[in-house]
Length: 397
Image (cartoon, rainbow, N blue to C red):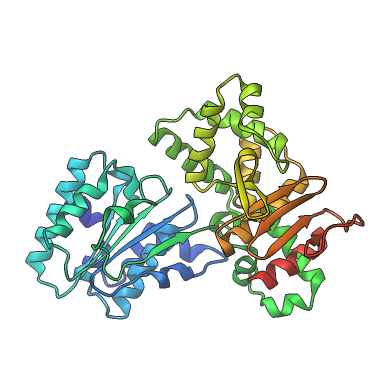
């Protein structure tokens, strides 16, 4: 239990927050906030919650804030609150031994209910088998469990592995802040900016560079390096080639926001289109990119050209710097619109025939232009110049 003791300081200190690295870093930031997603997690026994999102979005810090609130509110006593970081666990058997130790400790302490947080669970292959075994044994029937991971790999399908075993549990996705969330943490109200477009444009200019990550918003010097290190960690963990990832991303920088085929990248790099597809799907699972398919009427065409979009401005800037290739400004604007509509509706497409519609999502059809376009488009298509994008995003929320 010694290694567990070190990451559970609330067992030993009333003012444990000053001894926790994540919360001390959080307290020292100029812009800090309690993430809204922690409110979505069910704390009613029995619950098995799943939390996943991009690296560097502050998931671990959010979980520590959840622990702080759970203890302060009296929902769970300090001695009934357990935290495990699997980023430092190397095998399934070690994970099993850790859970056995915690279960033994829970029985010794005899608390009415317990909160167990298992962070970075996707570091261990087939982790779910061990957890499922102990749930089926009835070891956690009066408890709340939260499992988190930095990619959808190994976690997004995890709820399917626990049929009838999730109780009140929720699935929670953690993303970089959207533009409306960004302006909120900087201390501005949406309503005020809707009446002050010049200020909204100035803040949007900042968002285009800083994006929605805690470190990038606070302009930490290591923000970009930390993001790339996190991506590299996932690349190595899942047995992918860092150079091939970098080459594919280099190719993408020139092609976005235009529609592209897997073959166009494959021919450029001298690899198979199946390898390109595999790696783009991997980057999608890491929540680094999204893919928008062609939509013709009600038909979604997956086999033809598709659009790739980056899921946060800071991701796009960091990867551009990493691979050493710039992107077109129009790609950044279109990617921001694609991501915001994707979060709202869970789908995003495009249309291309005699004319093109950049983004189709929900009941929106949007054409993104750097400046106001005088070209005619069919009825129902919203034409957005850069000056109009901030208001569009604020109203969308």
